[in-house]
Length: 400
Image (cartoon, rainbow, N blue to C red):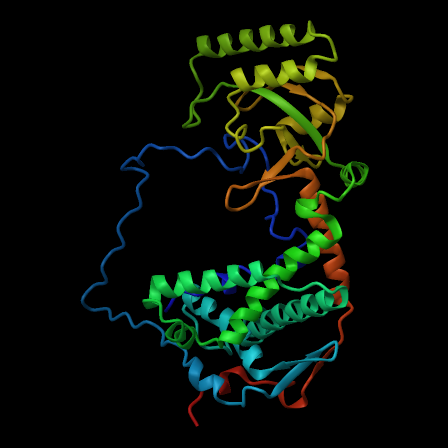
């Protein structure tokens, strides 16, 4: 199967998940005790950790891959301009509907190798075909929603936006099709107009977010950010962690653990001797110098989390008043000094899937934007053309 154009793969209705382009946060805790991202190592994997080679099938077994779905056959079953459904009075034609369906179905084939769309998905009897249709309709409804919303507000694409979409097309065509964009669109099975529409949808998502909340949420006031965090029971804490386990999870020698405890007590005494006004700066200084927390690079401003989310810190932070330090707190993987500073909207909250950090202000803004999107999406009026109300997906792929 061919690769899909990036703008077609990256737009699975991100805003309707409630956090826009920012991926949902993973638990910000040490890998030694909780499921959390550990720092990547430059070392090569040992032989014991290296994946085993895939065994060759025995001569007696014939492995037959599932047939590639004939999407061209299915697409030809209806004229491209046939109305399949309307969303808030806006027509969704067969070309757009089938392109959205194909996008979802191709990935189902790639990852699961399934082409029988009558296969049950669950005990309730939903089939793979009906599930893919539902997902395609979600994508199309979102696209129509953003188009109509932007039109209402007078928001459109700039020449720069159009140039960025064009540049992505060209880069993909150059890389995989020798620069032949026509061949690329023919092979992808989506019309050029549909692919450009999806590219515009991505841009409109960003533009609408910026319209309401500013670039990266900058227009959202600090008080609104903090009200959201406290209203949703978020805690905030920093820590200096001195590990008592090796990277492999084995206990360090008792003498080394004793040294770590002594150092923790010494650091705590240093912090307690500092004036309260200088404590935030001094804590950060010692944290950067001494902490062995593997998540420090990803969360340089500390951890924002809900009660119970980070087991090793949750109870201690809950018990501290803002500006207070803990005693030395032991945990399964070391000794901690925990500090509860004031929340700051411009702290780094987390990082997206690409590793790019984003702030607390951005997180709250995009969450609020997601709520607005959900409300608008739920209020849509969707009407199916009666000829497609009970569409038989399997029949689309059957030769006549």
